[in-house]
Image (cartoon, rainbow, N blue to C red; front, side, top):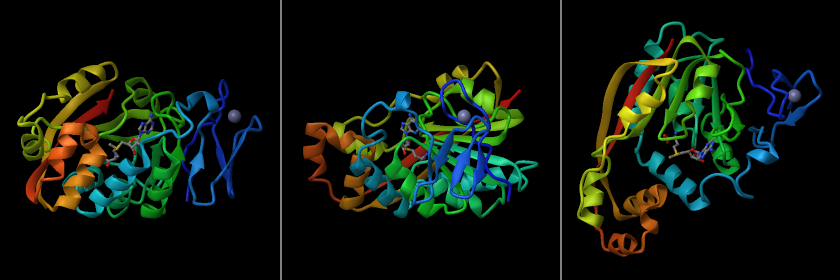
Amino acid sequence: MTSAPLQCSVRTCGASLESQGRTWRCTHGHSFDVAREGYVNLLQPQDRRSAQPGDPAEAVAARAFLGAAGVGRALNQWLGDRVSAEAGLAADEVLLDVGCGTGDTLACLAEGCSCIRVGIDLSTDVARRAIRRAPGATIVVANADRHWPLQAQSVTVALSLHARRHPAEAARVLRPGGLLVVAVPAADDLHELRQALHGAGSTRERLTAVIEAHADGFHCEAQVRVRQTLWFEPDTLRALLQATYRGQRTQAAERATTLSGMWVTTASDVAMLRRG
Ligand SMILES: C[S@@+](CC[C@H](N)C(=O)[O-])C[C@H]1O[C@@H](n2cnc3c(N)ncnc32)[C@H](O)[C@@H]1O
Ligand SMILES: [Zn+2]
């Protein structure tokens, strides 16, 4: 199998990395060992924002719990259909998931395509989970706000699902004609829960600003809303609050302890952005 087209993250280097057993090396002598768990950490000291980069462990665990409970399944199924329909996503082509989280999407997409799958996340805790969930994928620890450690024009499909966005890096790594799929929470995402906690249902629409931020280099081919409504038991509601940080607001956290089970809608607005 062809390996992922990773790029050396040493400042001012940027050479391509070659996979040699349990090590990735560039021609300038920089090397990165694959961790025991299977991910490769390309994070440079200047890219760390804290000693423990990424989301808090409770948020990561909560998100994994929600994934297992079916949250995100509708979006992954929709993506699976759309990505396998994408012309030319052959075995040597690259699908990149930026802010891949616990790997549900990469695992789900493995069913529909045999391409090279790469996930980037800032957290080593998340990377560990992602490699377990999506064993055939290359999982890279990196700060997607800075630099996406992939070679220029090497990616056919890039995903940013409720995750970091970097229009200039997306434009650099996608090949001409490639596809960037961006998902953000839709206005009615979790509206039943927000109503119960804050007495307010809907929030603002976010996708237009995302499309505008990518106008240089991408044109928006389609906008889709993907929705699912699930019955959440109190423990799933608590996980949802932890995963989305809403539980950290004191008043809301108090009200959350009184919640019984309820139907909750999760909704994403998705833009399909074609690289010119
Ligand atoms: C809300 S989760 C979304 C995960 C997944 N894409 C999904 O849809 O389920 C956001 C993810 O982005 C990661 N993240 C946060 N800041 C990041 C950064 N600067 N670079 C790369 N990943 C980052 C977090 O660790 C987390 O796994
Ligand atoms: Zn190098």
